[in-house]
Every structure is written in structure tokens, then in C-alpha cells.
Length: 259
Image (cartoon, rainbow, N blue to C red; front, side):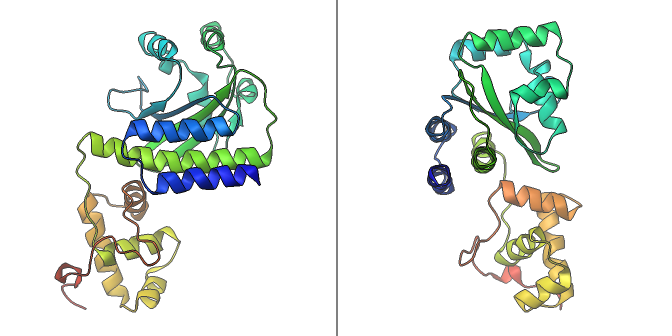
């Protein structure tokens, strides 16, 4: 019950949208601390090096450790990233050895982290297909009992933080976010719910051809070819309409060229 309340408080705070990456970091760190973790790191993975210049990093790890991590290019060898690419569920660091054989330099990384109190961790793999891979790690110096309730709570908190972080990160770097019209956003949201074109037409009271028109135009705005890519981009940019909420008002631009 306590975990659910803390999770709800954090998600509500993030849903009202933090004004900056720093504000998101503070809210995420506060939520992590309330769940028993004084350290948290939400990191977007790139290729190699994984922490590319414009990747999102939201963390309250000690500054000295973060500096050492970057200067020594630990992001290339960090086994936490390797395992997070293999699993689609949260995992405790005690599991890492079951998935990768730890080399001496990787053990040395864990030993250095230990000196800063980063000893026991739970990592949540995060992925928006065709957009980004990331992970959110909650760490502490003492062991913690891993329960299904805790893992679920951490997964939901990490997911909300990831979505909010990408939105802020893109805005900070001047990424031009396409704006979907109300109908385009509605159709995209219903695709995300697994609805067919016929079902979307029935729900919205429009023809299947009109549904395809709005979906096609939404894909053109984002420059993507697959519906899964459209949904992923729209989720990241908070374009999907919730009940009773219009992202963009009705306009002439929402009328298909022909029925």
C-alpha cells in the first residue's frame, strides 16, 4: 500500500510535467529515496560509446563517480547495460553474473562504485521501439529484499520518468516535434490500444478510408513508415489524446481530402 501511494505521488508529479531535467531528477531522486534507494540513474543508451553527446542522463550519483565513469569510458564495459538489453523486466544486480561473464575490469568498475555507496542495485530496462533504449537503476549500499510489489513499482516509476525525460531532453536540444491534429492523435492512440482500422472507424464514427487517411498523414508528419514507429514517437512527444483532452482543436486541416 505504501509503495503504491509513493508511486502514485511520483507519477502524478511527473504527469504534471517537470519544467526541466533538473526538476525531474529531483522528483525521481525523492521517489527513489522514499523507496529506500538514495541513488538513481536514468540513462539513455546509444551505440558505442553508449553515452553519446546528446544522450539523456538523469542521475543523482556522486559527481566524482560520474566524472570518473565518463573519463574512463566505463559506459562501454558496464555489464548493467548489457543485461538490460537482454531482459524485458527489472533485475537485481545479483543476477548479472547469470547473463554475462564478468571480466576483471568490470569487477573493478563495481569496486569503484562500492566506494561511493553504490553497491546493491535494481535496474529497469526501458525501450520505446525505433526510438530509444535506456535503463533506470535504483541503488543503495545495503542489500534490499526484492519483492514483486517493489519490482512493479520501480518499473512504473522508471517508465514515467523515461517518458518525461525524453520529452524534456528533446525540447532542450531543440528537436522539432510535429503536431498531430485531434483526429490524427485519436487514430494513433487507438492504434496503440490494438484497434483495427474498422474498429477505429466505429469508435470515431468515420469511414475506414478516412481512418487510413489520418494515419497516413500522421506518419508523414513524423517521416516514418510503420505504425509502430508512429505510436512510439507520439508516446514520447505526449501527443496521444486522453479521455476528455484535445491535443489540437478541430480544424479544417482535420477534414480528409475525400471520403
